[in-house]
Length: 446
Ligand code: PHE
Image 1 (cartoon, rainbow, N blue to C red):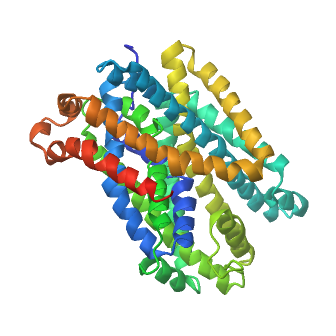
Image 2: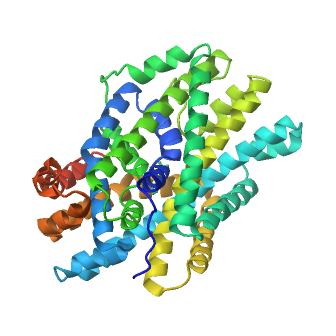
Image 3: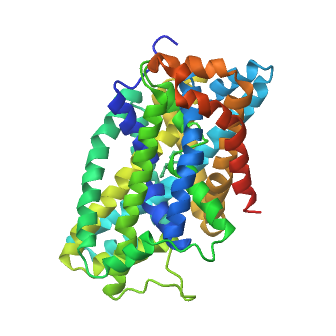
């Protein structure tokens, strides 16, 4: 594989990896999970789990990827083969590829809603009431059309390859996203009612904490860092020799959790600003509205009550969401595409088209059976499979690999690796502590 593509710079990698990590999970999932799980206590638990469990699991993927320079199936097969169980590597790898593809299938539906709401901010400005209503009303046709549109966008980028596609678009789009974010936060925090949301978000109340809160926080952390499904592994495989992996992994983790935290500063106050404007933000049982309704009802109601300023804010907000979703979804599609290209040698654009079409069919099945499948697929992939795959990957690095292999993988970008704190702690940690902790949290959900 002499001509294997690479990211052209450290910044390019960080933008791409942060682009993958920062997505609907941060801006939609994290605040809504916070709202649905009791506010600030959830934030504290989430941050702890992100650093104690998700960062070490991220490191497992980056290290495997850079050491084997291949997609998740080939990489794990190679590690398994060293112990005579190549088949186990293939199975776990394929499990990851399937989950990445399933995540892509539902993620594109949600991302399609973002695009539809974005389009609505334009049609409303133009006074096209009929189209606007169709765009924001829930219908199978709308869902299918916008899912297709969004998937086509992702496929166009992925077929351009690693540096001309993934890296170029991530470095272009991420700064725009950061700026929009900042502008929106400043705007929302200046509105009446914002402080009530801030209080709920920032002052923890640990009384009445349920075990699900831990499971939700962990699922959220794994989803947000794009873990378990081979995304970070394949991105790590495109990293240059000289990169210091633990440092670069820490930068990605900090950026991702930082943005999730900041997204809460936008969304939680926005809920209470909406209340101030007369929107009902509580469910019938008196709890704060969470889940999809938060983004697709509370926020649009807020934008709608702000007059013409609301249209601009809606436009900015849904542009932000679309960009965030796009840089994440390209990283999901890269998982099966890289496997197809490396395994069969078919051309990238052909592989993208074929795989994208198959996954689109899965999205169609979900769209047509929305009530029975949508939530089920989300739970199966993100709440259960991602942490389970996290455990399996820890086992591959911690148990099947010799410590020296970890050292070899670290050394090129970290000459002092052997005496580093990371190398003293991490191999033992992923071997014993990390898989057990993840399993314990998962057991809470039973
Ligand atoms: N991390 C992305 C988000 O927060 C989602 C994602 C999951 C991306 C798995 C890639 C793989 O939206």
